[in-house]
Length: 125
Picture 1 (cartoon, one colour):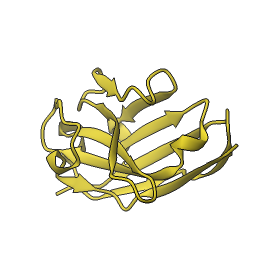
Picture 2: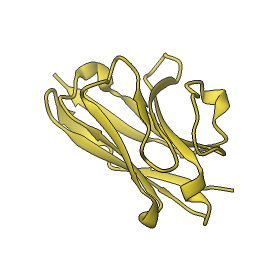
Picture 3: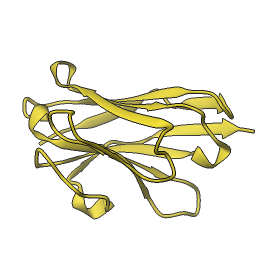
Protein backbone atom coordinates (compact mmCIF):
# COMPACT_ATOMS: atom_id res chain seq x y z
CA UNK A 1 0.00 0.00 0.00
CA UNK A 2 1.27 3.45 -0.95
CA UNK A 3 -0.26 6.77 0.07
CA UNK A 4 0.56 9.79 -2.05
CA UNK A 5 0.31 13.50 -1.23
CA UNK A 6 0.98 16.18 -3.84
CA UNK A 7 2.09 19.73 -3.12
CA UNK A 8 3.57 22.69 -4.90
CA UNK A 9 0.68 23.75 -7.05
CA UNK A 10 -0.43 27.33 -7.33
CA UNK A 11 -0.70 30.27 -9.67
CA UNK A 12 1.98 31.07 -12.25
CA UNK A 13 2.26 33.38 -15.20
CA UNK A 14 2.77 32.09 -18.70
CA UNK A 15 6.46 31.40 -19.18
CA UNK A 16 6.96 30.82 -15.49
CA UNK A 17 7.85 27.71 -13.52
CA UNK A 18 6.48 25.56 -10.74
CA UNK A 19 7.76 22.40 -9.10
CA UNK A 20 5.32 19.82 -7.89
CA UNK A 21 6.22 17.28 -5.25
CA UNK A 22 4.58 13.98 -4.44
CA UNK A 23 5.45 12.49 -1.07
CA UNK A 24 4.84 8.79 -0.62
CA UNK A 25 4.41 6.71 2.47
CA UNK A 26 5.56 3.14 2.76
CA UNK A 27 8.86 1.31 2.63
CA UNK A 28 8.36 0.02 -0.90
CA UNK A 29 8.31 3.39 -2.69
CA UNK A 30 11.60 2.61 -4.43
CA UNK A 31 10.03 -0.39 -6.13
CA UNK A 32 7.19 1.57 -7.75
CA UNK A 33 7.23 3.35 -11.07
CA UNK A 34 5.50 6.72 -10.79
CA UNK A 35 3.40 8.81 -13.09
CA UNK A 36 1.97 12.30 -13.32
CA UNK A 37 -1.43 13.04 -14.80
CA UNK A 38 -3.53 16.16 -15.09
CA UNK A 39 -7.19 16.94 -15.51
CA UNK A 40 -8.60 20.21 -16.75
CA UNK A 41 -12.25 21.16 -16.19
CA UNK A 42 -14.52 19.27 -18.53
CA UNK A 43 -11.71 17.13 -19.86
CA UNK A 44 -10.52 13.59 -19.27
CA UNK A 45 -7.52 12.85 -17.12
CA UNK A 46 -4.40 13.12 -19.25
CA UNK A 47 -1.02 11.42 -18.95
CA UNK A 48 1.87 13.85 -18.44
CA UNK A 49 4.99 11.92 -17.48
CA UNK A 50 6.29 8.75 -15.87
CA UNK A 51 9.51 7.63 -14.24
CA UNK A 52 10.91 4.21 -13.45
CA UNK A 53 11.56 3.08 -9.90
CA UNK A 54 15.29 3.83 -10.23
CA UNK A 55 14.66 7.21 -11.83
CA UNK A 56 16.73 6.31 -14.89
CA UNK A 57 13.90 5.98 -17.38
CA UNK A 58 11.48 8.82 -18.01
CA UNK A 59 8.82 9.39 -20.62
CA UNK A 60 6.75 12.47 -21.41
CA UNK A 61 3.66 13.34 -23.37
CA UNK A 62 4.28 15.39 -26.47
CA UNK A 63 2.47 18.35 -24.94
CA UNK A 64 5.05 18.76 -22.16
CA UNK A 65 8.21 17.26 -23.64
CA UNK A 66 11.10 19.69 -23.40
CA UNK A 67 9.33 21.80 -20.77
CA UNK A 68 8.62 19.38 -17.88
CA UNK A 69 11.10 17.16 -16.08
CA UNK A 70 10.19 14.28 -13.82
CA UNK A 71 12.65 13.12 -11.16
CA UNK A 72 12.62 11.26 -7.89
CA UNK A 73 14.54 10.95 -4.65
CA UNK A 74 13.98 7.48 -3.24
CA UNK A 75 15.76 8.40 0.00
CA UNK A 76 13.04 10.99 0.57
CA UNK A 77 10.20 8.92 -0.86
CA UNK A 78 9.39 11.80 -3.18
CA UNK A 79 8.82 12.30 -6.88
CA UNK A 80 8.97 15.70 -8.53
CA UNK A 81 7.62 17.39 -11.61
CA UNK A 82 9.56 20.48 -12.61
CA UNK A 83 7.41 22.55 -14.95
CA UNK A 84 9.08 25.28 -16.98
CA UNK A 85 7.83 27.62 -19.68
CA UNK A 86 4.28 27.13 -18.45
CA UNK A 87 1.37 27.80 -20.77
CA UNK A 88 -2.27 28.61 -19.97
CA UNK A 89 -3.21 25.22 -21.40
CA UNK A 90 -1.20 23.59 -18.61
CA UNK A 91 -3.89 24.72 -16.18
CA UNK A 92 -5.31 21.62 -14.49
CA UNK A 93 -5.37 19.57 -11.34
CA UNK A 94 -2.18 17.53 -11.29
CA UNK A 95 -2.08 14.04 -9.80
CA UNK A 96 0.74 11.68 -9.04
CA UNK A 97 0.17 7.97 -9.26
CA UNK A 98 2.04 4.77 -8.55
CA UNK A 99 2.15 1.45 -10.32
CA UNK A 100 3.39 -1.68 -8.58
CA UNK A 101 6.22 -2.37 -10.99
CA UNK A 102 9.76 -0.98 -11.36
CA UNK A 103 9.31 -0.14 -15.03
CA UNK A 104 6.12 0.58 -16.87
CA UNK A 105 4.87 1.71 -20.23
CA UNK A 106 1.57 2.76 -18.70
CA UNK A 107 -0.04 5.95 -19.91
CA UNK A 108 -3.65 5.17 -19.00
CA UNK A 109 -5.01 6.14 -15.62
CA UNK A 110 -6.55 2.71 -15.03
CA UNK A 111 -3.09 1.16 -15.24
CA UNK A 112 -1.99 2.93 -12.06
CA UNK A 113 -2.79 1.47 -8.67
CA UNK A 114 -2.46 4.37 -6.23
CA UNK A 115 -3.33 8.04 -6.53
CA UNK A 116 -2.82 11.27 -4.68
CA UNK A 117 -5.55 13.81 -4.06
CA UNK A 118 -4.25 16.28 -6.65
CA UNK A 119 -2.90 19.81 -6.59
CA UNK A 120 -4.22 22.73 -8.63
CA UNK A 121 -1.98 24.49 -11.15
CA UNK A 122 -3.28 27.66 -12.75
CA UNK A 123 -1.34 29.48 -15.45
CA UNK A 124 -2.41 32.99 -16.39
CA UNK A 125 -1.69 34.55 -19.76
